[in-house]
Image (cartoon, rainbow, N blue to C red):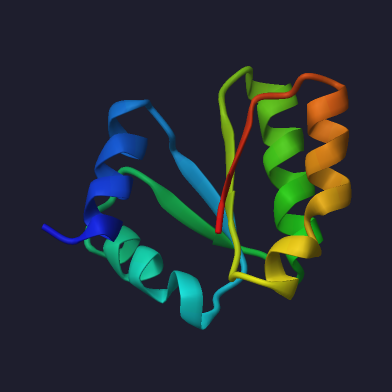
Length: 97
């Protein structure tokens, strides 16, 4: 089993239904693992900050974990404002990078 498949398995077990993301080399294995199953849907966003804010909004609206995935480096740092907002407001957001 690959690590990406294990991550997707845990997301499925926790009842996660959506992962907001911006494709990039660092998370390509995760996106490939998501494409091999149908329980957790990737939602492709135009910008990393948008993915993080979408995960925060999803968490607030649904009461579930909001999950987003970005590439490493600048891809992740683009999400810091949204992540800080979620932290300050105590939204349940999981960041994968």
